[in-house]
Image 1 (cartoon, helix red, strand yellow):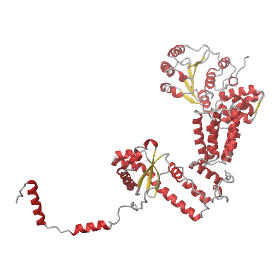
Image 2 (cartoon, rainbow, N blue to C red):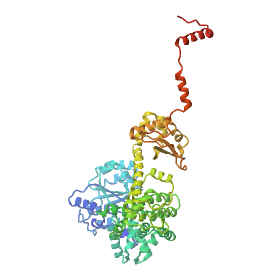
Image 3 (cartoon, rainbow, N blue to C red):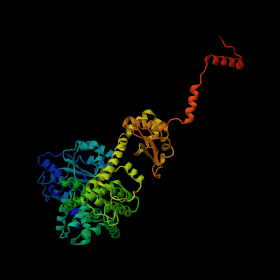
Length: 600
């Protein structure tokens, strides 16, 4: 007998052998036992989950000599013929190659004839979504009202491509990805029946490579057995598949949590030297971090982690040493790596991302600093090495009192505007540790400034709407701006490079700025002056004079006139004018210059 591949050799032959699809098989069993069997079925789901196998079992159930029965005997002529594909009354068609309108018409004509020997003529239409619209329309009436001896069992991985008129005439059963633990048990049973053994780690790797598909997992197992012989190990799976083992993802997260940059770079180097696909490793790492997040956020819902029991235990243990904010940041950075790896060589983006994750805050990211504070408070990161801070240790985050660390975390909210303000200030010189009272007072002032800016930011859309209602031209000037700083009564707006030559210049003009000031004063009750900066430019020059709470400058033009001005005013006010004399002078001027005669 010719060799059969494992997925053909161990194909499910009864409803009870179908793994992970109890909701489908129980429906069919009840329909057969109760005599409520529909004439047209549509099996949908991912590849390798048992759609065609279930359709064949259904054909056996209705044509078995013991039936119709939900437990076909598998020994009668009809069951044997259907199993080996030689039955002339069970017709399997691949609609990818028989999906034309002529094929549909031929099928419709042949369906009118009674079965040759079986009880029912069953048409198994695989990949039915590949049929053309014309073919669907040609089969429409037949599927709706077939002869009593005809049954349709259709299978597809893309049910949304099937015409709604077909979907409304069939009973749809959706098959799901096979859970990892069930698939692992199935593979271990097959390995035992093949007279071989397999390690737990190797089994985990094969299950993950199968990704919920029994056919894919068995294809991988067959390849590994051909390489390893009777004993399958983790190294065998890694060598055959050319992908990283699950343990590598776990090790990478452990090294990131420990802040060991050398270790993560060494891990990437080892993966590269062994010829493994770094893109695949990144995908495995993202999937693992996602499992960690699920275990951390929903510990009472183990079904969210599709893994074997052994692997789930490892995930839960590692998740207990992580912070939720850290996991979210990992997912965000690794997601960016996946995008970058499609454009450049995959090694450098992965190394940079792992280094950033291992040393949070080194790149100046406010979110990373908050991540590091969370790790320190949870005890998940060791203190920095000697030399990174003051000599007495007061310069390290770990040496600060918990009260100050929490206050710093509150003021370190991840907003681009606050990051820009911190960048403008530049690095502060090293000073002696401040007292608790001075630190608290400084934090209160910073929080007050942030609160004032936050009020402007929160009302910014409303401010722009008010400006727009006053003048669309002024609105066009301020619409691209972003408020980034509010200090000493001066609101600084940031513009991008493309708006530097026109918008930023116009924004400082009093005719435009006054409209914005009035809107802010009306909506936020704050009197401000407007300044601008362009993204990427160096720190601005010294700012204008301070504006007090009433909105007046220290140098507003309210000074008294000087001595010379007061003397001139006094002399002008002391002059006495005679009305009659003035009128006579005016009349004489009219006569001499214009020759006019005054009218009495």
